[in-house]
Length: 237
Image (spheres, rainbow, N blue to C red):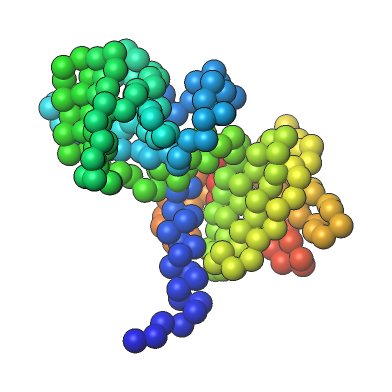
């Protein structure tokens, strides 16, 4: 059975873009540029993964991991004393990897994990794909991320770096240096206008509540992108 190419592109794009729909818990992921991030930038880490767990008191919490060749970075929520630890590999096999150190242990097996902190064990933790993509963007230094629909698009802005605009369900993209933003504090609007020999890209970010037209997810910013005579409307944070 054959599927139309547009449906395939759309499905792949939606899988990549869902991460912007929810921000991780406060304290789970540090702000870009913090010491926890800067100290690790040279080790070529893998993507961030957010695991959601249920504690014995029925409270839901999450923690974030970012694996390396011989260790894992772990960001723990406020319920634990340690906000950030790096754990070395203790054991590894085809099914799972166990990291241990300083009273903290993490066992990762695909999309599931087990966390142990000071003797308290939390089993059945599962990957939250939406939040993982968002957490990974923040750890890569992305300061603004937004998504829109019909046609599907997403944009990531890194101050002092680049703007990456992916649109038409991921079939097309534009990559430009991030210009100095123009901020209108009174109107609560920030504009990035990047002009290169190849592209003219304008991004307007307004501090205005926005609801995703497909998922119903709420965002803190309304984002408009103008590119190649087209206007894209969406939400971000």
